[in-house]
Image (cartoon, rainbow, N blue to C red; front, side, top):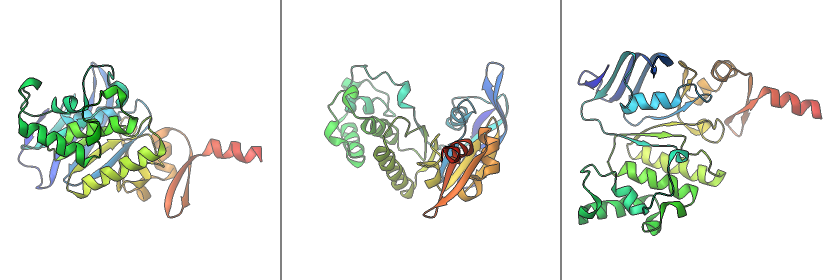
Length: 263
């Protein structure tokens, strides 16, 4: 059951209680209890098929649980940024037009108002891609494509932003820029939940992590979650956790052993 709730805590945006969820009769997630608070900045990590995107869909409200309840704070605005791999980049549309399609009024593009165009220009400027507003979406770099979809989401002025693998397929520099951009948005008051497979480049830099493998295996800070025990339950393989320059670094133990054997 999914519904708006006025009984949530003053800073709780979404609450999942005893949730089981999946598709048709196939269960993907079970026994999920999870709350998203205002200003949270959380990474969801886990292997492919473990239920990360399913958890995002529950938080977004586009998937009804098979059991349990999802509750959204009354009037809470939630926006979603999909994986770039799911987008048809040959669709004949410019960056500005693509962003405008997300406006809440949902009017046809020819009826776009000057205030709407100003709003788009402002969000593109904020994200550093104002110069590509009239460029076809397929002509953008990976980082620009991701920022365009981030602009679509921000145009709706959300309180909670959900991103599915926002750094998948981008280079290290773009990933670094995206992490800092999301950090700035969070510092401005936006709650952010993202999925990532990148334990070292992304997850280790986030203040809060949730490890998922068809259930929530662990939740907390990187120091609490990035441990051999939790990672083995999450990924089904033993991993070594090292300290480097004050940061946790996760290494596949089998890879370490192979490297040692080669010496």
